Length: 354
Image: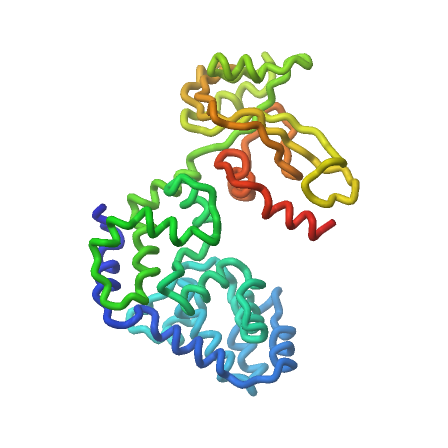
């Protein structure tokens, strides 16, 4: 792996005798040690206007805590590629940043104050929590801040369901041979090196294929006759209509993932507390990969997974005969349906809501 797009930075990181982001560590420590009463932190949080937020105005309004707010600005400017006032507040000559976090300045400010107040990361948005986790423990964390990117990497590069607890170790195992090629002078740079490998162009193209790969949910009943077994035995799926969904079926591409499903509701015998209310259920009967589209709007050839055991998916449901899962919203259901991840995490949310 030559990693042309990142090779210069990889060499710089590997040969660095200090932690590559040490200045952020120092500023974060100063931020954590700044003395302020909890009531004042609450006042600063309440003063953040999410409709109209100007950092300079905010800093001027609460000038009695100008030092604290400046530290917040410096942290953001050195973590986030899109951070405000990087030319002044980013303390590095080369203006290096950790990542593009996709977090607005007002949200950064609020969540850094919440972190200072609680000293906990668990209640912060994922990108903020992942960024701070990396700065506080860079040897065992990543600059890959996006949970969606992590899920996509787990699915399409590592070939496993995403598990937040063991994701880092799974990446280490995957890149073991490549990592052995680098003699890190400072072990604190290990997580950064691993992150740079994940974003090597040739590697990124593998896990980003979710942008070109589509996931389809299809029905199998024709006039109340379930054709699932027939489809599996013949290695096909057929649209039961002569005059509906033809264009949609023609849009299915070779390599796309497909699942046969049925939808219904249940109120009893559910694996979580639903207070006897009706819950949408989607039974997944079979999954497979499209190997040919005959372009007649009806028939596709499918390599059905012979090892798949039918399963129920709770709450998340598509009822149409053929539907394409919206990948921008539903990465978790894609993992539940196609990649063997258990839905326990979602069920816990439902239990809390009930």
